[in-house]
Length: 65
Image 1 (cartoon, rainbow, N blue to C red):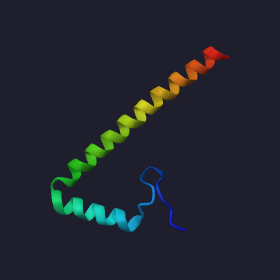
Image 2 (cartoon, helix red, strand yellow):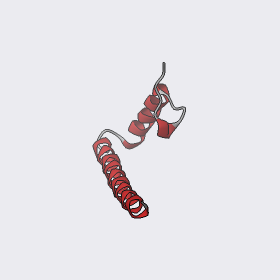
Image 3 (cartoon, one colour):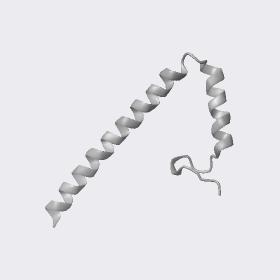
Image 4 (cartoon, helix red, strand yellow):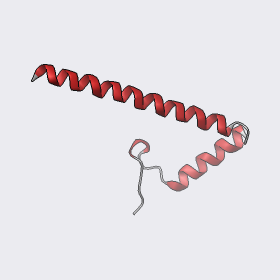
């Protein structure tokens, strides 16, 4: 069974490999670590915002009940 990530829909491993190859060819090997750091920072920011929203939702739920 082909496992797919929810946020990218029907994109499989082959498509991801093709996309990464194109990115590598466009930006080169020197830019890849910088690109990966940027993605990691974006993910960390997203997780932080999600955590804050969850905390606020819990507070609202406590006020309602």
